[in-house]
Amino acid sequence: LRLIVSRIYTAVCCAHQCHYEAKMPQSLLTNKEQLSSKELRHHRAHAIVGAIVMLHFAYRYAMFFSDEPDFGFHHHHHNSSKTLLLLLLPHTLLQISGFGFALPSKRHPDGNRIWSEYRWHALFFFGRCIALMSIAWSRKTSAHSEITTVTPWIYRMPSILAVFLTMIGADVITAWYKARNASSPSTIRGLKGPRGLLYLMSAAQFHATVNCLLTSDRMSVQCAALTVVQASAFGMTLRRKGIIDHVEGLVLYSLVLFLGMLVIGRDLKERDIFYPATAVGNLAAIIRMNFGVNKYIIWVVVCFVLPIMEENASWWCAVSRASTGVLFLSACTRSWKLL
Image (cartoon, rainbow, N blue to C red; front, side, top):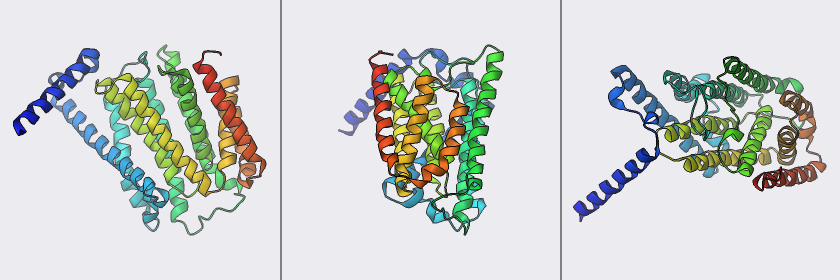
């Protein structure tokens, strides 16, 4: 019986591997025989660090679904900055070691594989996550981390700077590649998939940015954002190697975004600003994607709205529901190709 089961398992694995190798161009598959010993060591080290990072994310989400406060980071609130450095070291090594791989200069037509420009964009968004996690950590470990109903303007300035410096950095990278005729569309809408789904996935990023501006003393939201950055790159790597197909990659990315939105939603409800933050995130997405308003203008206005959001007036609930309806209607019309 053990022999039969073993042979069946081997046959299934071989068929599975052959299936993907037949579907994927050979240029996308790693040929270990063509790698030097140094390159092979780099591949293995990158894979090991990547496994550690994915396990860390799995542990944090296990804490989340076990109803542990703040992804389990509350256990570390008496610890020093050395603890934070140790926690973030594998993530930093993974992001930096990714620059050791040769990547195409242009985005693949299906949009679900890493290319050179994307790698630099991911580095800037990774930096934003690290900066905001450091801000949250300093507030968590400080004796004066309590947040009042109306937060002073100076309290928001570090997170505002992190958000705007990230946008400027990403735009500089795009301009650099455009000047060399090597730029590709880098937004979610450049993916190959249902237009309505891609619209909602893009809207999720606006909500993530709003929560970056609202960074408090909690690590969970920024850790979820870091999960999106590095888990999406992991999915693209699996796609490039032919381990998953395009649909599976799209599902994986959608799942990571959905989990991130769950974390954001819980955080906003616990802070009693769910409706204001949802309304502002929806309106920012609608104004940007439906009307093409400059993103810097949108986020400057959002920064000035932050004090009003934290007052949580009763009318925010109606604005939140109405804007959510408009957002989903816009997604549906794109699916039906009416726009």
